[in-house]
Image (tube, rainbow, N blue to C red; front, side):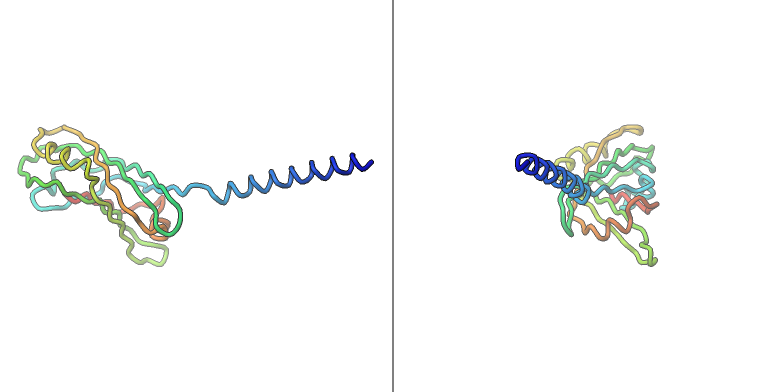
Amino acid sequence: MIAAVAMMVSCTGKSEQASGSAAGGDKAAKFEFSVQNGISGTTGSKNCFLAELGAPIKFDVAGEGDIIDVTATVKVKHTEKTEVEESSEAELWISGRDDDNKDVKLILQLDDACKDKLTEWYKKPAGEEIELIFKAKLPKADMEKLNAKQCTNTLVL
């Protein structure tokens, strides 16, 4: 009888522990970020019309806490425009409004590994496409305000 009671207690404890682990796994779900649209505008001296609009943006998010590592990948296609001001610097601005109608802006910098690729792309003919990677450490609270919304996404060249 004592063995049967001990067996019941150990089985019950394991099942409660297992369900507790499953619930804990839900709390630690990975934060995901996206926007509903691609590049909606470009800016920057002579390069203002150099990239074709609408390129999709893929976001990868890593880390936990108030500040999160964000990587954005954008495919950029060269237009017919030939007047170029070469630079190895670029930014990606994700802008929108929160539920209280206040401006929220996220700024990501061009990854160092893409700088040479960008300067080479400036010399390429129309139709040439490259993939650029932008990175930043951003406040999770601001990202949550723009998550899955239609935003103004500006490529600064």
